[in-house]
Amino acid sequence: MLKTGIRAGMLAVLSIALAGCQSAYYGAMEQVGVHKRDIMVDRVEDARDAQNDAKEQFKSALEQYRSVVTIEDQALADKYDLLNDEYESSRDAAQAVTDRIEAVEDVSEALFDEWREELQLYSNASLRQQSERKLKNTQSKYTSLIKAMRRSEAKMQPVLAALQDQVLFLKHNLNARAIDALKGELKTIQSDVGRLVKEMERSIAESEAFLKTLQEG
Image 1 (cartoon, rainbow, N blue to C red):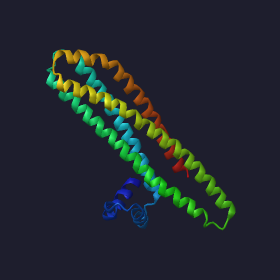
Image 2 (cartoon, rainbow, N blue to C red):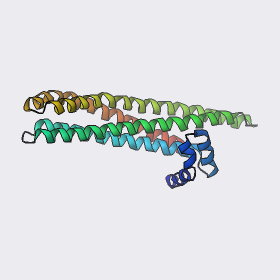
Image 3 (cartoon, helix red, strand yellow):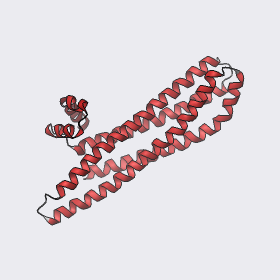
Image 4 (cartoon, rainbow, N blue to C red):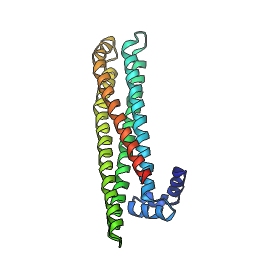
């Protein structure tokens, strides 16, 4: 499988990767048969999966928030612990999405630079033109993909901020009035999470379409 080959290649060049030299890393990966295109596919898949994980985590955080403000017989300290755990998990999931998007951007930049440089190596003008058209088409779809990823990433921050506000408020106001105040924010957070989930689903669909483009090529 592709991912198995990529993981094996990554182990072979781990010392180079740790050194942070991306050009040397990609060069070493090619020496073991893993090309930038393969790495790009792998990273887009990882970014798609991270977005899907984050989507589910934010939905889980919303459900936990809803239970915190509606279940009356739950100890306030326990409510804080549950909500704080969901906030921290959501924050980690959001960071994973950011990391995956940056990894996609890194390998894509290297891939497109290489592609443009190699256009000059063609002796057959027709083949060069076909490759150039394919490059432009792939870049256009990639641009749409990254925009979708970044839009969904941006949608996470207001939700995280709202969750953090509620966690902090509950932490320092462990009393019944705090829960009453949190109930007033439930509708807003539900709306924010709903918009976030829709944006992430659009971004995931863009990832699927882009992967299909690469596979067809």
